[in-house]
Image (cartoon, rainbow, N blue to C red; front, side, top):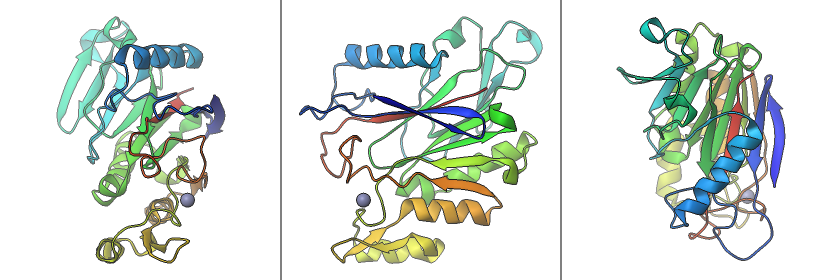
Length: 264
Ligand SMILES: [Zn+2]
C-alpha cells in the first residue's frame, strides 16, 4: 500500500508493508539481502505510479547532501541534469536522467524550477527519520535520511544551507518528519543519551519501560525551529510500534520502506 500526502505543494508518498510474514515484503532496499530483480521491479512500479524518474541514494549515515538541478551551458535545453556533491559536479545527459544512478549521499535537494524532467527523490528507512522539505510551492524539494549519526553530523543544517544557496529563505520551507522510531521506543545506553543531549537537549527521552532513550523526531524539529524554520511537522507514527512499517529494531531482518517527494 502507498499512502499519499502533501507537503508545501509537493506530493509525498509513503510505502507501507502489507500483512504477511516475510520481513522483506514490500521492501525497497537493495542492501538487505532481498532478490535484486524483485526490488528493482518494485522501484520501477513506484516510479510509474509517481510519474517521474526516481532518484535513490546509497545511504551510509553520512551528512552529505547532493544538489540536483537542470544543466546549464552546454546541456541547456536537452533536459539533462547535474549533480553537485560537496565541490564536485557531475553532468548527466537527458537520456541518462531517465535512469538516475544511486547517489553517494544521505540527502538530496532537487531544484525543479524551469525543469520539467526533474526527478522525484526516494529515501529508504526502517526506524531512521525520512525528512521531506518543500519550498516555492513544491518547485524546490529535498529528502533526507537522518538517523542518530546523520542527525548529529548535521545533515539537516547542511540541507538548509543548500536551500539558502538557492535563494530560498528557511522560513519558507515546509518540512515533514515522516514515520520513524519514537522517543518512547528508541532505547539507548545512558552514556549515549547523555553525550547526545549535550549538543541537543531535546533529544533526551525515556522509554515506556523507564530506560534512557533518544527522541530523534523531537530533536530534529527543535533543531530546525532554532535554525529559523517556521513550518515543521512531525507525523508521529512510530515504525517500531505499528506493523505497517519496516522497523529494524523490531526485526533486524526487516526491509526498507520508501518515502518519495515529487516536485511540482
Ligand atoms: Zn514508539
